[in-house]
Length: 403
Image 1 (cartoon, rainbow, N blue to C red):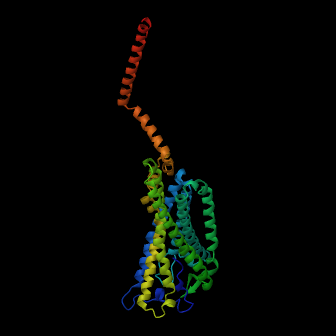
Image 2 (cartoon, rainbow, N blue to C red; image 1 turned 90 degrees about the horizontal axis):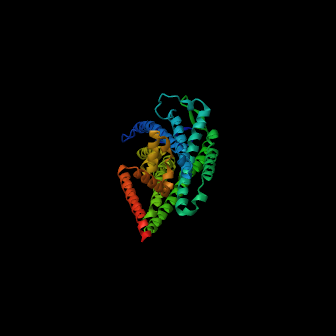
Image 3 (cartoon, rainbow, N blue to C red; image 1 turned 45 degrees about the vertical axis):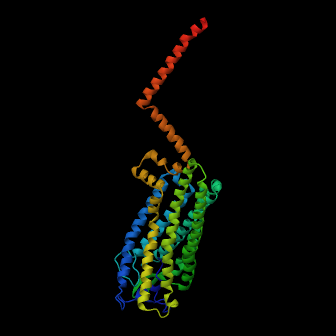
């Protein structure tokens, strides 16, 4: 959700359309105030849930040494942190009034101080850009794991993951500092609002960074990598049919992790791409359709607001995807909720080393079974038979020597 392009009020007529300055009802009774209020209160529900879910995700990954030491764990922690920062920026924006909307009581600090106005939008844009490219990095890491399984130990290293995450964060911060010279406080209807001050520069940067860098290019990369991953999984499934049953366990565990991260990548495309398309139509509708009616203009605006709610939901959805698609994450959440001391050692180690886990469990079963009363009686009976046989053999030795 970007700064509303239609709230500057000082540019061409194509910018001042019916998306924000329309009457409360058009000729067919469409109530735009109801749409804006629905968007406002929906954000009031989505943003706190997203902040809590991303905090839980970071806590679960950080509580398990086995999770946070892996390449996948590093990327998932970075993704949760980026989503948290974006939702925090959305919370700051939500608490400030917007031109052309109802004036709700609140802190309204971004409309009173220039620093918060610029920082709020820079935080939102940089975290959105970082979240998109961390998702691309997660998909690329899964593709490397499936396509080159023998080179995973040399290619996918936690040090390289940390370097890539730091590179993405620095690039996102550098590319998204443009609100500091394109956004500021401006007077509209005798009130100060956080608006665009340099429209041409802002639109150029937004088109490159927010449209192509955040949505178009990452979506194309994710679609291509996801298709390649699915093809490689299908090939691996056909090859697995010729293998023995004992070799299917680690493969199924790797598939579980792959499906969990594929769900994150696919939800990114499904939930965020419609909002980019609706934003484009809402922003350029007067240029694309000069004779656009009021009703159709309002319909495009409603579509933009609805898809914006759906796109924001994507930033709080990953925690539920982890729980649904990954039994390892669910187990770790349960361990963290129980505060189970030594049980925190569970994590990906159980899935990455299944053969060792099976040997350990078999040894534990054997030692525990040897302590059972039934087996103890059986062992004592067996030892009694052995002792009686040894006694009989010793008694037979003198007779055989005499003979």
